[in-house]
Amino acid sequence: MAREAAIDVVTLGECLVALIAEEFGPLASAKRLRQTVAGAEANVAVGLARLGNRVAFLGRVGRDAFGEAVLSALRADDVDVSGVSRDAAATGLLIRERRALGRSNVLYYRSGSAGSKLDPADVEAAAHLVLGARWLHLTGITPALSKSARMATERAIGLAREAGATVSLDINLRRKLWRDKEAARVLRDLAIRTDVLLGDEEELRLVVGTRSKLDRSALVRAAQDLGPRTVVLKLGELGSFGVDASEAQVHVPGFRVTVTDPVGAGDAFAAGFIGARLRGFGLETSLLWGNGCGASCVGSLGDLAGLPTIDELESILSMQSTDANR
Ligand code: KDG
Image (cartoon, rainbow, N blue to C red; front, side, top):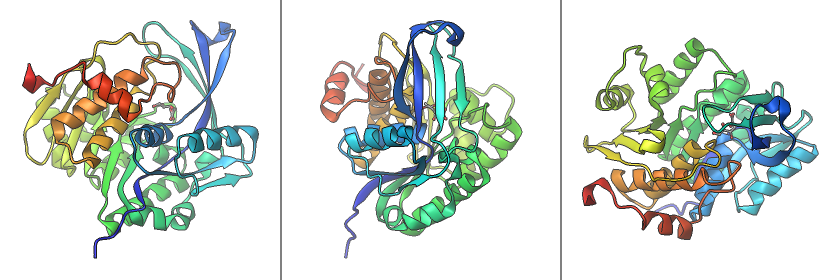
């Protein structure tokens, strides 16, 4: 008898409070910091929930006010937080500036945080959620947090494999958390065991292990050779490029959009892409959904504010046709 999945997607990692400078410029002179909630996997969880999916987030937060803030934000979007426990350590915090041009500097206050204490026992305690899900989404941030968080990631893959769920990995290289050499080794080892691999050019090159500049086609092919059936190269404002088991490669151009805050766009993209896949859409439409969610996200300050509902996404998509229709 077919098993009715209680949850569509499970994801795990560290959800933090983010204090984001409201005005542009260096953090040292920021006057106002806006309190929001962030964390790549939690962003994807909220993005998928807004698209109508049943999503569970696993992790730890502190028994402090910021832990409360994280839980309230996830609950407000109907993300299942039954797999989030409260830890004696503090909830992780990040503070970031806003830049009109170039990357924004980020300060992390997360070493030894509650989120970094995630361990395989947390995944074991939520095994029913992972075993009942259709999809497990991971990012390269969680294994960079601590040895126990890395082992939790491994355990989640094991359970998802047992359940026959699809496993995706968004590389999300965070150089403030680990060195390239270790990141490449660990992330390649994870990529080998995933079905869907997402990353930008630099991240895919790191995982593939090449210093040479490959063209898009060769890069996604090389990543596919590691094991994932589907590889997505995120191109920012230029859209996205992907390959899947059909072997066809597709480029879907990005949306023209006024950028208020680019951070979180990659997570929004992942939510859109996975959301489309879960509805049975092909590669091209899934890339389009990813682009649409990414474009919607960058229009608002903070990672979560601009994540679209399904109605909002449909209205965005009606403004753009795919390559095939041009
Ligand atoms: O992708 C956005 C994330 O970078 C942000 O929400 C914080 O998860 C985060 C991190 O570890 O950098």
